[in-house]
Amino acid sequence: MSLTSRVLAGLVAGFLLGLALANASSSISGPVNAFLAPVGTIFVNLIRMTVIPLVASMLIASAGSLGASGALGRVATRAIAIAVVLLAVATAVSVAVAAPVLDRVQIDQAAAMALRGPVAGAAAPVPTFAQWFIDLVPQNIIKAAVDGAMLPVILFAVLFGLALARVAEPRRDAALRAIQGVADAMQRLVAWILELAPFGVFALAVPLASKLGLGAVGAVAVYIVLVVSLTVAVAIVLLYPVGIIAGRMSPAAFIAFCTPAQAVAFASRSSLAALPAMIETAERQHMPPLVSGFVLPLAASIFRVGGAVAMTVGALFLARLYGVTLSAPQLATMGVTIILSTFTVPGIPFGSIIAMVPVLAAVGLPVEGIGVLLAADTIPDMFRTTANATGMLTLAAALSRDNRLEPADAARRQ
Figure 1 (cartoon, rainbow, N blue to C red):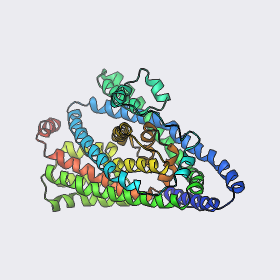
Figure 2 (cartoon, rainbow, N blue to C red; figure 1 turned 60 degrees about the vertical axis):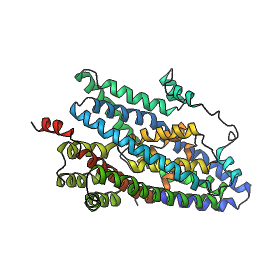
Figure 3 (cartoon, rainbow, N blue to C red; figure 1 turned 135 degrees about the vertical axis):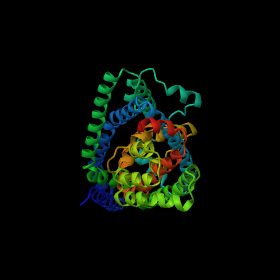
Figure 4 (cartoon, one colour; figure 1 turned 45 degrees about the horizontal axis):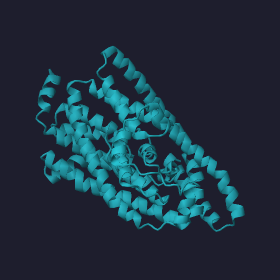
């Protein structure tokens, strides 16, 4: 049985047991929840302990490699600029649509307070926008990491990687190899931890269903429908027009350009698996070699528009589930963290959900909620991966018509 099937089975079993306990006496439900709660906490802590080294190492390695590559670095800079704009629009649209929809989801607020624990009533002070910018530059980056302030850590990692790109080549390459080794090791560790996901999801789902009852099941169903609908809408309303207009293609031509890679992405749930199809269609369209040979592999590694939608909806869903109201500065923090976190999604199953940990930590949402998102991710993941592939091809189409690619491309062929 695949990991996805085992995780889904854990969710169903946990919900069924939790719903049974919801109607049982506290003398029965109390001990069961007390036994399972530490199991779920340990599973979440295992994931959390990998987040800072995983995110920091991947960002440093990416920024250091791109900044050190001359002409390729210039192309990468333009590609990343377009990618950030697309990610920002996708995130903003997701917030605008998902927030009012999720506000209509009926959640027992008393049960939500119980899920959040004894400190639920202690409202954290809302920072001003000035303080929000000040907090981006902490006095001590180590203390920021210890405190779980992910956005300063992410920005520091990007700046450190860019600075590393300007170091003398022998030392830079040695440092980048070591950092990439850390990133690879952390991805392997996360893959091991995910093997425990069926048990962790089960342990997290039982208390959730026992406290929220059928409302938890209905809320998860709304989440799945919402994230799939928004992912499809962003692809149709944002990615297709950008690809058609910037790539100077007819709608039929762009659809034909995307279809082979989309089919592979949907079936495999892997952007990397769809990469050969993307390269083949790019070459068939006579796109510059820098696009087919550099931009597309780079995009397949770090550019995930579908991930931005999923992270946004997932964070807002958990805020609703746990009865947390996000302020404007918190939404801004969430948006920036999501955009940066999409560049660190590991190439493993459930990668986008794992990458949500910094997002939840940045706005004070319970990280335990990712257990529910992991289990409900099978269907959204297929659509999310398809949107990721579409975004990569949109980026390639936009860059293929950039005349500034020609000098770099010519230099590369000489």
